[in-house]
View 1 (tube, rainbow, N blue to C red):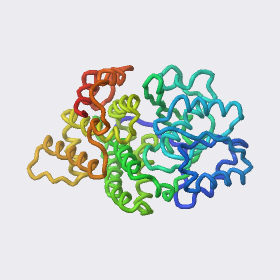
View 2: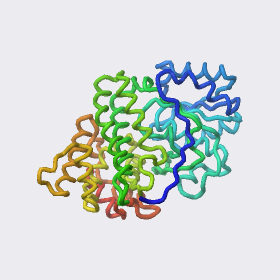
View 3: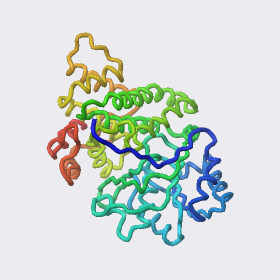
View 4: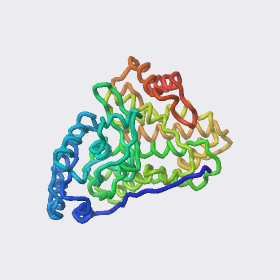
Length: 388
């Protein structure tokens, strides 16, 4: 196990009815809030009215930025930054899923930065401060409600880049599982894949002597698997929705499940290049990429993949070698993704091989990606070819 420091400053308020606490939670941060949300589904469910009522009761004036895209665009984030400055916003409140939360983090950081917020994504600057951020989660997926990470799409340049900072952790996050009842089935599926992929990026590690972290990762994966189909079959199953929501948070909240372990994140880097060009849902892209990454790198540590097959999928040894167990676990992963309705190839989105060279080159713009196995441009292209 490696040395580590773990600190997470986000206060989480979990459970049915917790939106009623918004006013008291937001009040300490000022008199003007920027409400950031997506396409308007929160208006159909009544959540929008509840949020406005809570803010008004706390004496907070609301400025709105709607229309956050599924892969949040830099141009939209620029609009939010401009509003923060012109309206003297003191709190950014994100109401939605991971994309809305990511956009809000970029806005909160960009509002206090003299340059372009895109500098943070291109490693030209480091975030030094940000406006306070609060969140109300409506989709279980990214863990953005309890981490400092965000992903931004520069649509004009067809680039998708991430940043992370201790300054962009939410001050508070409200997690009410009932708010996910109306999430469409495909978004639920993408969220399931996303949270599992976050665990994979941490679990498949070369770091030795991490039995507790491995079992924590395995537990999150098992819980997701146990509850995904229940939530799809009965969208208002509170238990299934609550368990999925907490799994999404645990999967990526500053490293709790993988402290002391080296992480990988190559598959996320590869997927970002796909959705930067083709604008496909992030979770769908990960469903395509991850099993192929697994096949490409599993020889680096077949024992970890064999352990994954046995502990997570319950595959019995029955005389199998580690390599045979590893492949069985990968096949089980693909089968589960297919069973819940996730895509398996780029062809499912009508994507061919025309942009493979560009995507492979951009993925390694800042050097090789991954740690389980360091991937060069040729490796990334090979994995993308497997995805066709």
